[in-house]
Length: 372
Image (cartoon, rainbow, N blue to C red; front, side, top):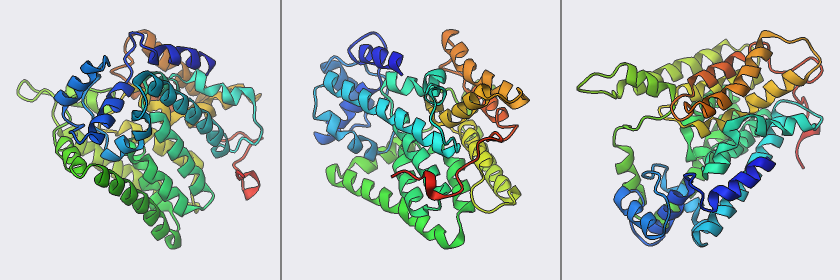
């Protein structure tokens, strides 16, 4: 994390690294000015006028831009450093919540070293992405669900709607496993937050929702790092080199897998091992993905670090966990990180083979470990 601190301040200070925050900052200012933040030409022109590197058109929903509005009130480099600091804090808080999710009662240096060991948890900080904020909201929702606070779980998932494709299967798993008497509270919590966010963004810019829907209706034509992108390329033809149908197949497969995992579970409530598997599968079936989005799997990385540092004999799962930790670094330094995430996600799934908790550490069974 110290390395990320120094590198990040260098990145947002204007080095050749491409920070995504520039596009967010420009789009937010455009929306506040009453212009279309989803028009690539307008955003590019604004970035060029302010000396900001244009990384591509904006795709997140309008409330993403609204949530970043406080940063748009600052000059770009000041705003970038402030956003970097917020991302750093979000990553640290995610590490603490991940510790509670895994039931690790004792804080240790090795637990908090996990963000530095798992490269995708550092990249959102360096590149000015919102994935760290999504991870924080998602982990807080998971912890709330594990403690039967379903209204809070729904509300926090509403905050994580910045990138819903990163936790789609986990969200469906929650909906199915939620107790019947709590399901309405879970749904209403999420809908309430969504309504508030959409209401604020509509008041700020009445045309923003229509502009976003128009942008979202276009086919996903860019090649990301999602396993689905590789499938689309494999089944491409000269007339249609990047077909859309694998995305629809992935959606149906995600529904089937979610229902299968939920029905197969014999115990009541949320099963931790199944929960982490749904996180990995959400990434596998995501229609589009970039390498820094893998930060949502940080809790799986912490599990792998804990297993490797334990005194118990090495198992098949712990060996896959070791590969899960080092493979992102190998892909990054070999230049393959921008186009491939499937192998990392599969290794994360295999690292769960031996169960999620060691015999000496179990998930909290009471509210004694609840945060103040």
